[in-house]
Amino acid sequence: MYSNSLQIILVLNTNQMIVQLINIIYFGMWYKNFSKQSWNLRVWRKANILFNQDDIGMFKTKGVLRWKDTVFRMARSEACLRGFNFFFFAGMIGSFIWVKSNYYDPKYVAPKKVESEKELERLDAEADKILFKNRLEAYSRPHRSLEDLIAFLSGSKTFDQFD
Image (cartoon, rainbow, N blue to C red; front, side, top):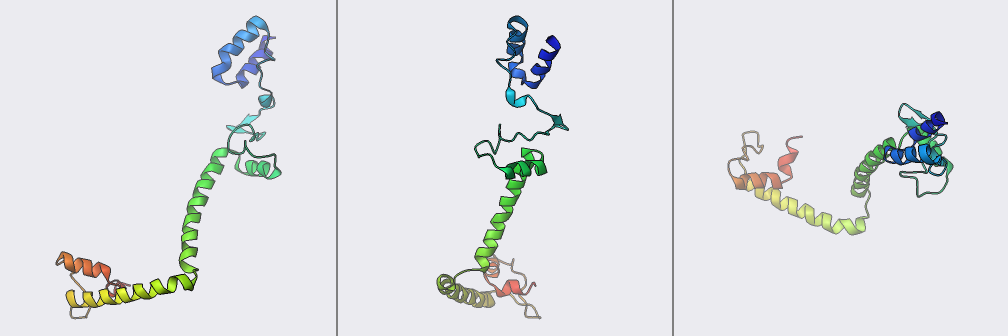
C-alpha cells in the first residue's frame, strides 16, 4: 500500500507533499487529493511527452483545437514558443516599418516630400557656403567648429560623397 502511495506523492508538487503524506499515512485518503490530470504524466528529458498544454500556460484560455497539439509536438515546450513569439513579433516591427516607408499613398506624402526637398536644398546651399572644401571639391574638416559640424550633419550632399 505504501509503495503505490509514494508513487502518487512524487507526481504532486513539493508544497503539498507533507499534507499528502499525512493524509495517506493516517487517514488513507490519497484519492481525495490526487491530481487526475497528472495520472498519465510521462516526462522524458524534462519535457512532458503527453503535451497537456491546456492545464497551464499560454493555451489554457483557448478552446480545444487540433493545431495546438501540433504546435506543441513541434516545439516540445512552452518556452520555445514564447521565444519564437518574441523574436517573430520583434522582426515584424521592422517589416511593418519597411512596408510603411516603401508603400505609401502619394496623396498624403507628396506635399511634405516637396517641402523636405526644398529644406534639404537650402541646407546644402548653406553648407556649401560654410564648409571648407579641399582641392578635390569635397567637404573636409567639418570638425573645425560646431557650426561647421552642424552644417555638415544637416546637409545631404555632404553624406553623398562618402558612398
